[in-house]
Image 1 (cartoon, rainbow over the protein chains, first blue to last red):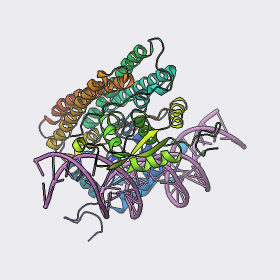
Image 2: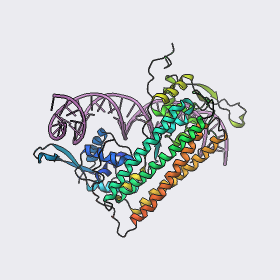
Image 3: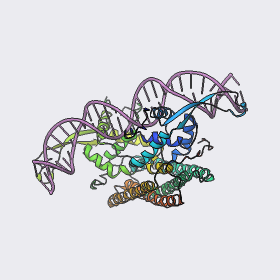
Image 4: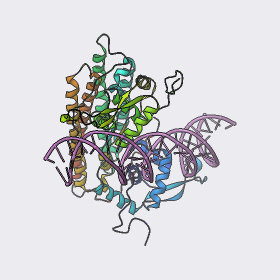
Length: 223
Length: 223
DNA sequence: CGTTGCATGTAAGGTGTTACATGATTAC
DNA sequence: GTAATCATGTAACACCTTACATGCAACG
C-alpha cells in the first residue's frame, strides 16, 4: 500500500487554496518547472487569484509531492540553438492521477471561500477627510489605470485561449469574465473620480483633520 | 519627551493595512469597544477591505496604543432600562491627535497596495474540467447570489450614510462605489452562468478527468 | 565581462486565523 | 434557566512574504 492519499476513506488533508491553484496550473501542462509555473500564474492565475511568490511555489511543490499529487524528474533544458548539447537541467513537474482525483474532490466537497475584495484605493477614499484632495484624485486615477491595464492583459489572455477553444473552454470563460470584471472596475473608478470632484469642489472642503461622527453604527449584523 | 511617534523626523514604523483600517474606523466614532469596532467593520470595512477577526482587533488595538495612536478608558455600559445602575464596563477606545496625524501621513506617503481579487468561484470554473456540470452551475449561482447580497447590504449602508451626507461625504462615495461594484459582479456572474450552459450543453462534455493542454504558455511576462 | 533570464532553494519573520477560555448581562 | 449578546483576551499555528544565497547560460 502506498502512503499517498489514494487509500479510500482516508480523509484528505485540507490544503490551502494556493496549493490547489498550483496543482491546477500543473494540470494544464507537462514537465513544468517551478519557474515556468510562476510565469503561467502571472498570465492566468493573477486574474482571479493571487500570484504566489517564487519561494512559495517551490515549497508548495514539495508538499504536493509528499502527498503524491505531483512528481518530478530531471529534464534537460533544450536551449534554442545549442542543439541539445548543453544538458542544463530543470525539475519537470507533473500532476499524478491521485493529484487529479484530489483536485476533483476538492472542487466537489470544499465550500467556496468568500471572495476577498481588498481595495486600497477605496479604503483611502473612505478616509478622504485625512487626505489632500489632489492625493485622493491621484489614488483613484491610479486605480482606474491599473484596472484598465488588467483588463487589457485579460483581453490578450482571452484571445490566446480562444485560439484553441476546444482545449481551453473553461479558461476562455474565465478570461472573458476577467475582462469584463476589470472593465467594470475601471468604469466605476472613473465615476468615483467625477463624484470626488463634486465633493471636493465646494469652497472650503473639510480640511485635512476632519472630525467626522459615527457611521452606520445602527445597522445590525444579521447575515 | 513622550515615547510616541510624534517626535518629528522619527520615521513612523510601517503598520499593516489592517491597523490603518481599524484606526480609520476609530476616527469616525467615540469611545468604541473592540466588540463594537468589529460590528462597524462588518457594516463598512467589509465592502472594500476584509473584516478582521475579533482577536486581531484586540491585539491591533494594543499595538496602536503602544504607538500612541489610540488610548482607552473604562466606560460604563448604559444598559437600556437599567437606568445606569449597572456599571458594567467596556474599554472605550479613541483615536489621538497623533493617530490622526499618522493616518494622514499614511495616506500621503504610502503607495497603494495592488488590489487582491481572489475569486474562489472563478478559480473553480477555470478547473471546470474536473467538476461535475451541476456543481459548476451551483458554484457560479452561489457567487451571483452572494454578490447580490453584498450589493443590497451596500445599498442599505449607502442610504444610512446619505442621511447625514455632510458628515459622511466620503463614506457615501465608497458605499455607492460598493453598490455598483457588487452589482457588476452579480451581472457578470449571471453572464458566465449562461456561457457555462453553452459550454456544458454539447452532448458528451469532457467528463470529470479532462486532460487539457497548455494554457497561455506563450504569453510573455513583461509588466 | 556584465547584465538579464532561467533555475532552485533556505531562513526569518510578520500577519492574521482558529481554538480556547472566561464572565457578565439580557431576552425568551 | 438557558440561550444569545456583549465583552476581552491568550495561545498555537498556518500561511505567505521578503531577504538571502547560489549557479549556469545567453546576449550584447
